[in-house]
Length: 152
Image (cartoon, rainbow, N blue to C red; front, side):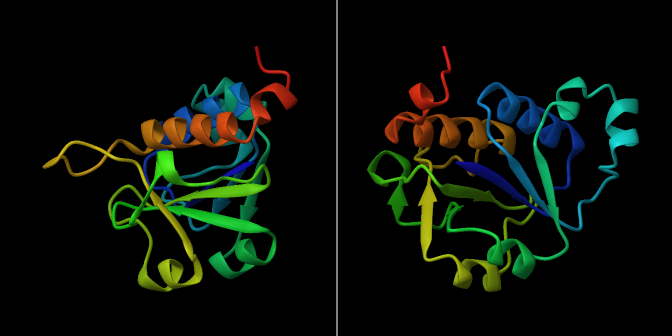
């Protein structure tokens, strides 16, 4: 299981996602450009102690990212499949878009597997870090990956 962030914009969300990733022993892929400095020095300076433990892989473009993945599952509010009904695989990469705009139509078109987290009618969307945590836990739990990773 992997997490992927498409051109992240808010450093605090990315920091929270990195912490979640470390706690669930899950690698994170960042598709550039990020809207902020993600160098090791910048992360240390920001006090993101979990970032040093995270397994982060950067990708110069969406195309470069896509070539390195087996199955990408895009999380989007426009998906018809819902999180509880989706069948995850242990080698899936969970892709999340920018906080302000999600992903462009070309990324939607490249991702045949799309999932949405059900929320209350009239609510627009969840915070990105919260959505990643919900999706990752569900994907790990339904693939029995929690026990394989020895998570307690």
